[in-house]
Picture 1 (spheres, one colour):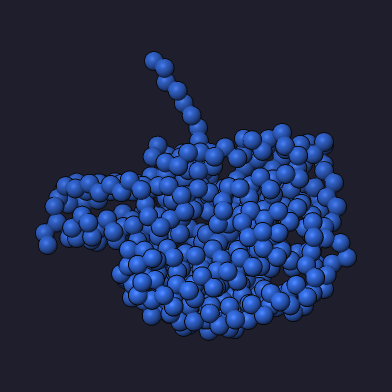
Picture 2 (cartoon, rainbow, N blue to C red):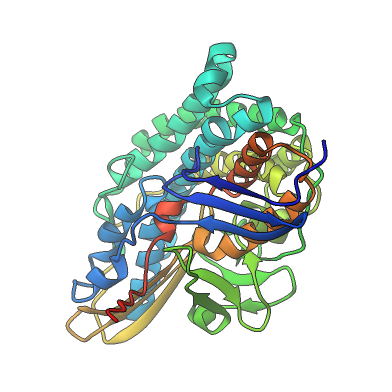
Length: 432
């Protein structure tokens, strides 16, 4: 097919992503002139209404930013508040936090793999259409997701917007018998996770790659989830306390979410492929076997293969939760004391979609004076748009309907959580 030299593609509402967004592509003279991932979901203003609240409130308030990854917001908030107060949480409480985070990785990744992303590779318009032909696959995905939900429900008090998390730890910790029952569920889930990695490894993946700098937490000796030093594939390293020295956020006209870049370096990517590329050596042997089954090498620079990385991380998260259950000794108390002090604290954890940064200023009375949240999807927007620009340039021979569908699939590679990213907006009113 001969492609038209001038054309415009506009998708007013992207399907199978969390939140509301659109895509705009303009081609002029046979060349891609403009690609925009337009995030029009209203700004949430969480940072603004955190100011003046008690320092103990961010874990509960920020969890409401997202129903898919509330634990990520709670853990980053706790890390930042505890950093400001000069408190280190370790031992059994830290292990329970890591296990809780594993539950969120399992349920979020499985939701994306089975219900949002796999239909693209299998030629279905939705998971509902897939279920008509392969009910067994969708049921396996739902069962695996439920295992993650069960972890979050037991440790967090409920599976969505957990209520058992507090600064310093938990309100209640589980008994050994409660975790033993959960372990029986997870041993079944581990087989399901391994089958998932092998299944997605059989998909056909377009030949597409990128050279973006990738950024993730790293913790020598184990796969980073709830803490670590920030590192990039180009060799840059810095602490969460130095995050704002290196990451610059900027507003763009077409998005209520800010774009981010590395100071003096440009756009970058966070998320499962970044974690995998920087931390593969710290995966368990079984998870590395799953990576081989999923067709992954030493790094992942093809965004289409991100579904394989998510499957591997599900294997790791299930196995890690089982390890933590086996060694569990109930802590002497569910939380450590975190007295307030006038200071600024920083926290960064690995949400399912990538690094989630929180920074809070607290006064001597324990009231929040400043708050800043940098979610992963907003960090990825500039790189997503650049990938789309190159993706479209190689497919201008497709008709509008096919090209639009493939562009939407390309966006779903990154599993954008649009609701999370619409966290701030500068408003200027020109009254003339």
